[in-house]
Length: 352
Image (cartoon, rainbow, N blue to C red; front, top):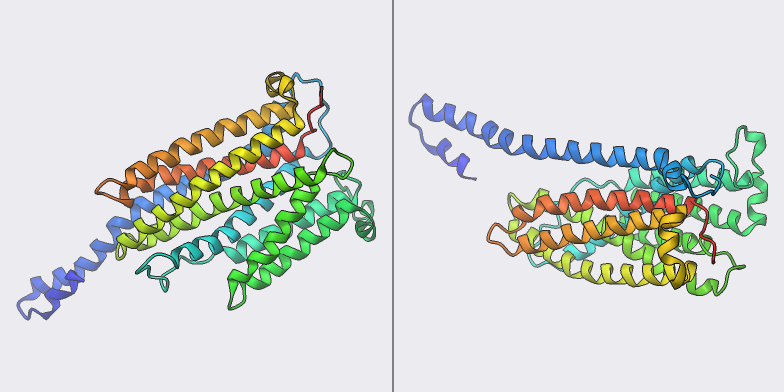
């Protein structure tokens, strides 16, 4: 606002030139650095999303004696896209709900929504996974290989169809006047994923489904919520820094609860699939265990970055100093999403 004041001064051409130059200087300087950092962050995320499906299966299975299932890399990529779509779209709904609890938050100034793009990605990914199910969990070579009509005849097929339809409804919600209603079809996708991960033939499948349901829900809200909170923080830091700091602080308090729930459900799920006496051996000798160990290490790194961001948030600089570690936290969470997708495509550990 101060750059507008000199225009009221009728004196000289120099004053007029300063007014003309001031907006360009004030707008160019702050934009270069964030745009470069954002480009680097996007490049890292894209690299991780590409490398985990390509190199992850072979690295995890190397030396274990386990055979790689057909299409593991493709399934990992599709499930990464599906999980990312859940994080982005549900994270927007969650972050906006948090922002409404912040006094003085400029809710009329929100970042451009990515929900439509996320929903489209979810539709494409779920269709790809449904085609795999329609081919008998094999990679389809031709359209004739797929038995689309038989999808409704199997449990996995019905769950795949549910996910496709849910993402289509979420896309329609994203384009409507009330995009927050997308939370309902997206919740259906999470329920379908939890059911898919635990077949009725295993012991106590309802307990496993409940653990996965809580684990996946908390993980999606943690990753997707932080992404949207940082987008809001970046937009608000020039004209509403206090609201941005309050929003990040509110998110941090809820994220601590989410992390605790993720930890508890993750440990319980691990002990259900790996008896306590075999955990140490399976973490290094099975593909599932190795991938799970990599995920645990990434989550620990994310927790350290989260703690660093929260400590910096208490400094006088506020959200400005907390923005950098929080951005790296998002990148690390992106890697967690990709590794989690790989985990769903690998053979389950043997109960020794």
